[in-house]
Image (cartoon, rainbow over all chains, first blue to last red; front, side, top):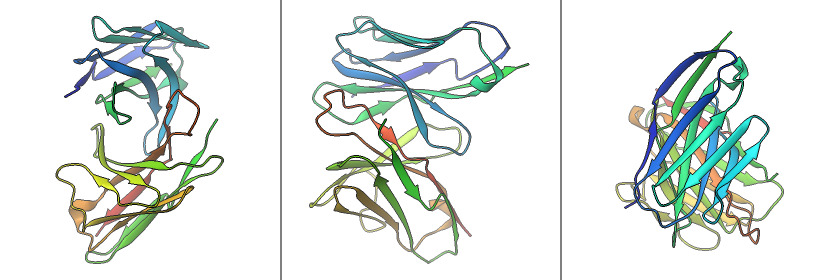
Length: 112
Length: 117
């Protein structure tokens, strides 16, 4: 059974810092990995999707990498801003299943 | 990108009543939709997979008779919480994947906050 862990659970940083959020998974036979952002009381917004054959994806200040062999993905946020404050979730779809397994998320606060 | 909507966004009901939550894919057809429940500061828990034209597939521990799912069309799935109790209070989120894209990227609705008094 796939298990997804996100570290740290919470993070508070000053504006302008570069951040790394970690996601690890136990079964490396994945189909894809997706990073989401969730604002309080809201649904999930897809940030980046990495297919199993890819190593990384970039969108603006966000960069997500994938290392299947070690069962890890990182979300890099450059030059963080207060508007980046949210909970970041990673979800892994394992091979043979279209149902993703979610981590518990990293709660990020970027203060001015 | 694909858009998924939910209605209502927030609902308060009395204990013992039933509440229906709608999930719609606005610009694509979805043969499969997913219903999740999220507790405060917890991750998403998959409740069931909603299949158009057939019965939903429920995850272990989820009561089928309490959480009724109907996937009436390719753009609409409904979740009905029957005989609601305060412990059913939670944030319910649905998702769907556009077919034929090949990436199986999931798109989520904005969620429904249910409070049972």
